Length: 41
Image (cartoon, rainbow, N blue to C red; front, top):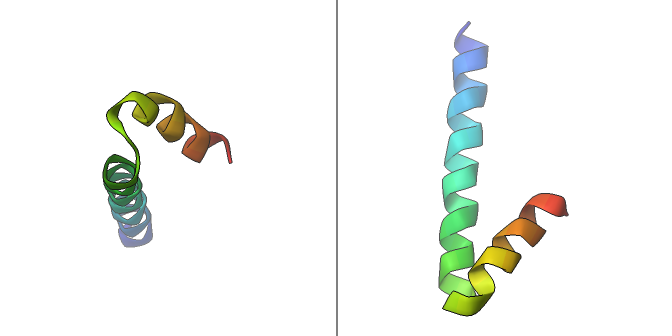
């Protein structure tokens, strides 16, 4: 159970970090397409 909770915590932290990176790197008009591209790659 602890391993599952750790995996969920890591996954959610990675998701937040990826979104923050996209917000910092992309222009506002590119954010929708850029965030979608991150998930498809």
